[in-house]
Length: 180
Image 1 (cartoon, rainbow, N blue to C red):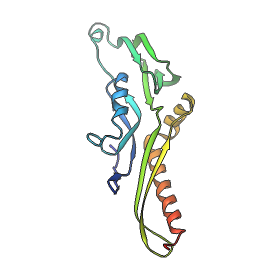
Image 2: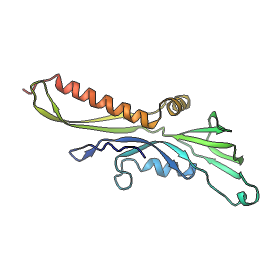
Image 3: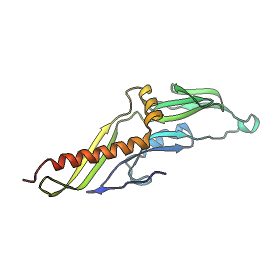
Image 4: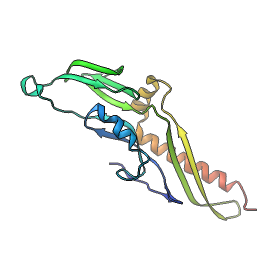
């Protein structure tokens, strides 16, 4: 989906923050838990999930009407009504959930560790060094901040910004010292 800017240093890959599609809201736990495991998605860290449309048996009899929508607890859950942002949903089950209501985004409320290794950075006396930086952050502190994150910045733009800022800060710091 996005250009994967993989950069490996001493076995660590540069993290990539992503927004990912999931089949239904209750799959968010499984998807958020995949981060850090290099089997399926490598260095990608899902921070925003977008549940897709799913079908149930009632759709055969009453199209667009679901018996219930399960809202996960833990992450920030945003919803829309007729495509308009309605804010946060509290955890639990919403019975008789029509098609015009939709869980739009599920945002991780967990602490996220972002790896930003940089190799071959020249010092002031032109000696290349390798630097391994690890940043820890959390989206929040509340659902309003998560909502603003989704609609104003987004996972992809945040990843681009964080990656560029880390790289520039590392290079600036390393270039300011001499190899003595």
